[in-house]
Image (cartoon, rainbow, N blue to C red; front, side, top):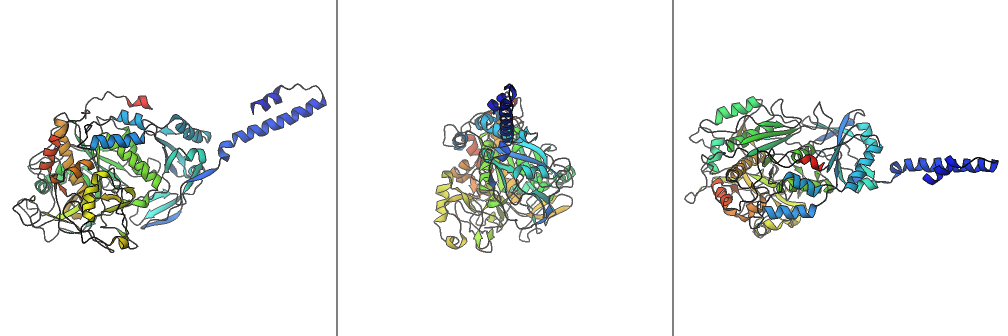
Length: 605
């Protein structure tokens, strides 16, 4: 191109022959230059994520408004993923000499930073089209840009539509799939929001169970005092000043301080619940208090007294921000939060069918979970409220609970001796498996080594569903990992709501207990627990084994059994026994929490 332009500009005009020659040269130069300028746009495109069917409960309202604003996230391919996975298992296995030797955020960002060439491809693709973008994380593994729907459709060769859920929630998504130039698609894991349609969870509220008696607290609910008694917490409360825990909320679930204070006044007399007002993080935190959101924050603060709590809320539809994928905003915020400020336990009551995310996107989510775990952060997720989750006669696994890199929490109900903890002298169970508790086997992720012996023992027992009929994958990652109470919760939100049920109750309950175990280690200058699963499966005696009850679905049920089962996992946590285990573990690497941090993450941008 440069050669032809040089000839065009500098060939002297002497004769008519020269004039003709120069005209030809200039024509060729202009043609080559024009072709070069169009080369990027003319590159062949390939499908990044294919078309998806509309999930149940959603309807298409019509084409999305062309001038509506979207915040697109480009998940750029990362490096160091094998080393990340290896390191996570080393620092999480209690038998490893590297147990507790977690990485700092700066070290994780450096390890997984995309290659410069890959970043350049995505950056050039956007800049060539006049689109301003920014690094959404310290190492630029997520690049974000704000565009209109019309621009997004041209950029991704797709069509956006507006969807409405029967609950009233609306989102903008591209059900037809989307494409990118081949050289860009090769370095991008996915773009959001596009094909992923979020799950919308509706809590179960059926009033208090008639079989549950009241104890001396006069409340026949799973109140903070009753949960602390059931799980052998006793009078233990937090002591480590830098210890933090958090709950997450999506799709408009808001926090209300007055509702939390009312809950504390009602149920926390004589004990400490929480540690002051929770810190609010995210683009959607306040508003009309949601039952789901208030259940999570009331429960976690009720179980773990005198521990700083945070509420991380993202709507995806905030009026002051472009429409986005709220789940991505949470993951990006974790990467952007320093070691001294990040909560070391997160509880999330969000779930959907495993196939809701494409395989490529789900794989990237696993990496983000690993990045949290290797920093010493525990991620707990509700396992779901649909039992075996029967769809068209088959068991369908739930996500993110089916990810090997999170701790999935199933559900239990009060037994005859509730709220007394289990004892050798009692013939009546304190807890039984609850029928709504989801569990089973992943269709995507293989069964990890740390759970194989326990799960295989379950599969060898009698009374399980017919595998050929239910279609479950006995070689897949098994879930849940643990369980906790999942019914008879009293929630203060817009109105007092008794009898709330679901594994959304169980996850913050278990999270609060592990937060107290973290507190014990932090107060002694030790590491946090981080990724919990290898610890859970290697210390079964620290959990209350649930052997009564089952989950139920239209095409079968999972029975509870001694040891691990697909309803309650390894059982419910016993704080006193977990404290003994945690005290005996290696000290690990103490990373200051709530104190000054030496790393400067801006150096990695």
